[in-house]
Each structure stands twice: as C-alpha cells, then as structure tokens.
Length: 92
Image 1 (cartoon, one colour):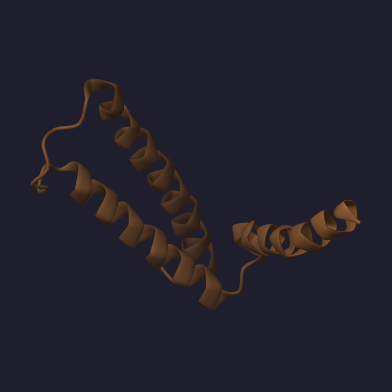
Image 2 (cartoon, helix red, strand yellow; image 1 turned 60 degrees about the horizontal axis):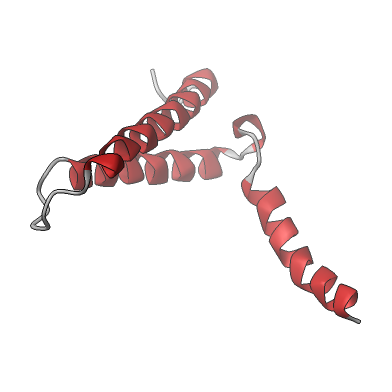
C-alpha cells in the first residue's frame, strides 16, 4: 500500500522533471526564446543581488564565493541558448 502511494506521488514529479530537462535543440522556437529571457532575467537579478545594493549586512565569508558559481552557471546556460538562437537565425 505504501509503495503504491509513493509511486503515485513520484509519477508527477518524474513527468515534470522529464519535461523541464529537454535539451535546447528539442525546444520549440517560442519555448527557447521564453527560456532565454527567463535565464537572462535570473542572471540580471542574481548579479544585482550580489552587487551590494542590499541593505542587509555583508554575508559571512564562507558564503561569498557561492554567488559567483551561480552566476557562471547561468552565463553558461545563456551562452548555450544564445548559440542555438544564432543557429536558428533569431540573433544575427
């Protein structure tokens, strides 16, 4: 009984994970552009949050390097999507 409940609970999670992990080549043009703009906005917000505009005190030193890692991941994602948009002819 418990296994059945666990399986029923995991099916939507697995379906969601499979649909969100599509490669860039398999996305439609509209999905690719939407994902590109969302990632670009997320990168902007992450950079702005880490730039010192906040009124909170500075974070402990062990947390300082984690923002740079997140920014570099977002930049890599954005570059992959930008290359695909160039290949499809949306960006000259």
